[in-house]
Image 1 (tube, one colour):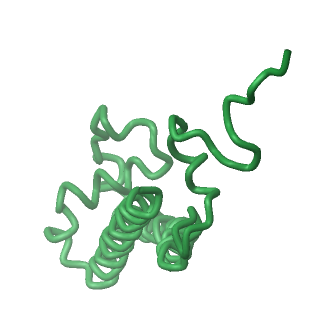
Image 2 (cartoon, rainbow, N blue to C red):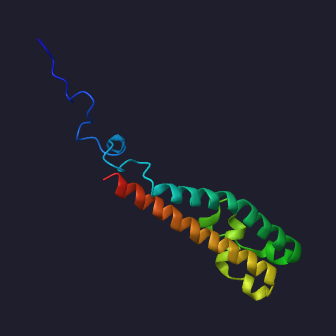
Length: 133
């Protein structure tokens, strides 16, 4: 008695979803579509850039305004991230009251870094879901 294979040799069953379908080569419809790579690169650069940006912000805030650094209250939602105090300081907007141009420049750099990182992450997610269809 001969047993029939459930799937033809070399073909993926239609019931399997992503990532199995992503290995099929239909033109450029693979997981590593060319349009996704810029988003990966930008997100990776933002990830690496956050360390010197937030570190410089923390150092400037500690040196020039230690009383403000000590009074920053951390939200329960921000307790786990590495840069919780810096994020709380940026989101509170209290840097405007200090009128320190260098500190304001560092905060704006951190804000733009966050915006670019979120946009890159969103583009990566959208790209993965549209390519895997």
